[in-house]
Image (cartoon, chains in turn cyan, brown, purple):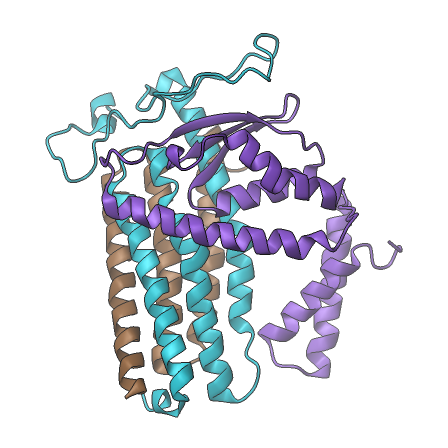
Length: 156
Length: 93
Length: 162
């Protein structure tokens, strides 16, 4: 690890700060994935790491290798652009898949989701009352034990 | 002095990312439903990618970046296929 | 655009990407150009709706607003995660709203923005009625989500695309 001494002090401090904040955000996302109660709440947790966690670590890496090699290193920007373009697609598809599965009565409702609105009835200007949906009734979080696995209960 | 701080920061980041990987792995094993597992797998891919970047910074080796890029691409394809399978029951229509 | 280069911006971006990933040399430039042209032709066969940018000047403003919003939302969500899921100071749930946007590229952009923001997740959208279902982690951070999204993002996106 001799190369770390070659960095100028200001750059070393900035890189250290960015890496620490980025990693902390990512681990917070992991904790959220574990602690939050329903799937729709957990859908928010990895976004922390995907947005600013990735951005800060990529910026730190770019700064470090640019100074070490004495030329502009833009490799990491590719990862950033790729993550920026793909994350919304994966999370969006997962959200839609979960909604469809939760509306499917054959699979059994583990989480209550708002039903599909009828196109003819209820004008779109009227906001529907959506309180009480997606509270995560079944999975009470990992820290409380004694709850039977819903998938095992359904027997698949 | 600053090199020590940077070394400590990189070590902390590696431990934190491994911890995040473990937490996501726990959620993937526990479920409770298939979409939770897919979401946790996606998070694991991202954490592994960031871990590769940080390890590459620690070693001063640019080639860890290639591994990170491959992991990012594979994670995207995996998650999209799994989500599609959850939605329709088939991967290719 | 012309027949030979159907998507010049996309092809140029691909050439730049190729040169960033490899080292710059004449051979790599030629190879990257060939790949970018082939990619442009294949995209042409997919017939995507071509984006028409009306006002380029609004794009940096939108980018800045989104970056700041994502930062703020990161901090808010980190606070929620530290406080724990049973804390009474926040409340998550679904929000339904109606979008005025009709241009597909603008809607895709809005979906990217809302999904990349940690506090909100885009769940379902119906194109005919413009009905959008969002899941929000902290419902109490805003009173009127419809007004927030209309004033902050939809107006700018309409200015750019329509």
